[in-house]
Image 1 (cartoon, rainbow, N blue to C red):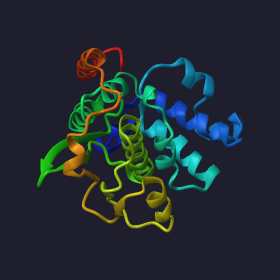
Image 2 (image 1 turned 90 degrees about the horizontal axis):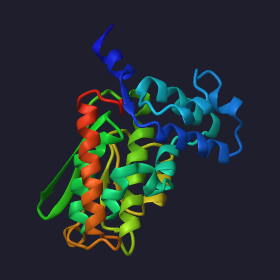
Image 3 (image 1 turned 30 degrees about the vertical axis):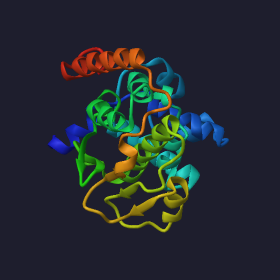
Image 4 (image 1 turned 180 degrees about the vertical axis):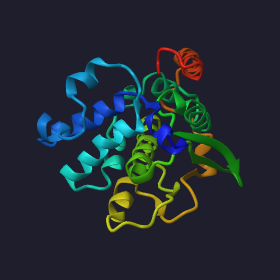
Length: 241
């Protein structure tokens, strides 16, 4: 079996996100039969199992969601409406961070506790904070959904801890400008460039040092400790995977 195919079969996505996707479809009025047709998955199984899903498994749900909703931007839409608490210890580490610079650093460092398909790198260039993404696995036809979901999640997190969305942020996405690009611009309310070399989110210099409204030193220490523990377990192939 080819390496790329093997990568798609490895457990890599926290089960919360498949549940969130299905819950969204249920709220849109679709039945379990509609949602799970042809996916070889079931709602009760997703609720009771705590094993990470593979990209191959999640891709079945993503394709089904795209077919049912006819909304290719649904990943962005769901990410933007998923509460921080859904991201577990990572979410709590984010909302309790002292400032936006730390928030970005935490997201980059611990994204793997929830999603191992990608790596994020945070750095500062010319004063701007940059969050770059590298695909550990070829995301294929799920790329727009997953990158959109990450993008929506990022802005949902920054909105949750700040006085308001930074309209000066800049976003680059590594796929051609779609016919539905206005949905990205409407939901993100900032500059979006398509057909870029890679996924990049930039935060302006004046925003990086902004204190988080929900900063909590004790909670932050505990959440970081939990994230570190979970990451070590995953790296060892422990119970989380």
